[in-house]
Image (cartoon, rainbow over all chains, first blue to last red; front, side):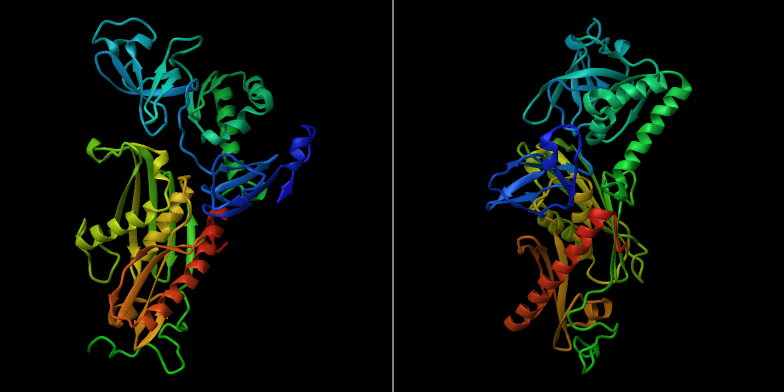
Length: 225
Length: 239
């Protein structure tokens, strides 16, 4: 276990981390709150995921090694159009289920049956999750500031749980990356990034993403293999 | 030559491969061997060599297999044609269907399927080299691969088989012991709670022999569980 101390305040003094596997006993439930990746069985806290245990204050949670993206309303996501009907697009947002983009929430007006003339299959879009049902079906919208079809640049992927590291505290790390690379970088909550800029800048952002993933996997740096 | 006629254990209790009655064959585990899968595990257990790969959760197709309140586990156990000394005809057969089914049922008791309604989690278990106890290796490898894929689970499943050779109960049968032994008892165990999720028996065991085989399996499962946890934390076992 390691104790992390910095200038962020007293709550970080209680922060401890350790690697855990599913089913591992993490201690007594009493006096603790359950965060992500843990459950309570017979008054004991048990891990349900492979990853790093965080104790922040009295909340016990697990930062998983890998995780599937689960959409939540309000998430900014980058998706690929996988199919369409006369008035609906089906969008792959990296979740277990494709999202639906109805024509009424699309980027512009199109005639009934003219969906492909507006956004064709295979094209990438920047959209926002509007609604998620209990069954994990979701509806996305392109009505909103900055939401558009992606016509230039590149789309890259990283694991959704690494987005926090990429963005940094109050967006500092991301801001620095943008300044260094002179690229427009838009981060989707589903782990997809839109990088728009010149060749060298795009390459720089890609290298940063690659090193971020490698760092997270390096055991020596306290990550999870 | 019949069952029990082949001498497989000597008077000192040493088996043909040099193990004692309670010993397990050497095990090595490697994670992330299939880059395109969401999680994967290669487990070598004696001469057994098994790869388990996990895909999903994804939308379940065809729609008739969807469950409105939970995900379904689609397990496919397959032996490669070159995995045994006699070539195996490729594709599904009665045995692989049975093992796929019992593996899925064992894993369903630990995977938190209710978190992914209408979805499917594909579990592919490929036997590259078969010695004996491939269903146990496949189940254990699949469990580790599921954890590697980040699928929420209440525990790992560790499976191991004990059996009887020359009227002696031994742990973790090898090929000759499996072929010429008198009984075989594969078990799937949840190591953190000691619960049983999978049990089969081939041959006859007296209640005392059954208890002895049970104890061997339980002890071996705890040891193998430590190997699995070590692999999940560092990426491989041994280092």
